[in-house]
Length: 332
Image (cartoon, rainbow, N blue to C red):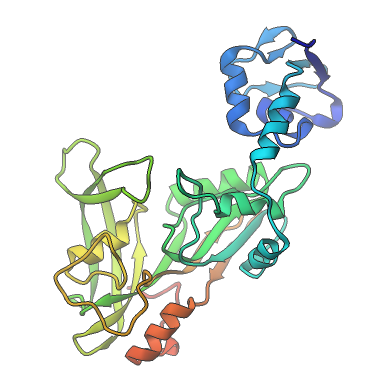
């Protein structure tokens, strides 16, 4: 085995987390490998085994890493998918908002947010387009289902990511989704609340589902959704705005199915109503608007245009976008 490498922590590095320091020094080194090296005890700080990737370093300390780290980086780069110029143009066309702290996109339906066993093309990988030398690629602040389109937000710095995550966790963020559903919810506005739990494979999102649960059931989560029917095509279909108060997996899809008005194109959560003829088979659920505190102060208000398959559905069913209320105040 080759001799280890000693890297001094300099004044310009400041007080920095160990994992962030290593990613700055070794472009292409990912978090998973850092965690693996720490577990094996082969990363040391001033001669002492590092305990956690979040350990804080101080100027004057020395970080010792194995020389084999370069082989690890080479292998990682060789296996990593190359982002083509077409992908870069595609991604930049999705931008809704961009500044030094935050980038927001209008995610297309069908594009996964993160990778999986059968998913090789996804946003988390493509966001390397916006990577910086100091902070790397932007990090997800929340998630959208693969088949859901609309607003998705990334933090570009560690501080921004932490503040965005806190905003989502503390419910200071307002989210509004639009959907085309089978039939018309009754009543036409209100609140859906109840217990739900996941079933299926957490490792494979394609197999994961949620079902109704009771208070006290193991792993049961309470979910609340406000909703309002904006327009309807008789009893055949309706355009519904939904405001999730909680943020559970598949919450909106599950709640609409529980109302007996499944979202058009949803293969997982279905009701006994007939499909709406003439529509695309894609899921008709769109993250229309988001209002969130900006990491540097003030409120960031974002709105995403409808995808083509939902615009086609609106035209077929006679819905007009101007009928939509202020996306940030659609409820009492």
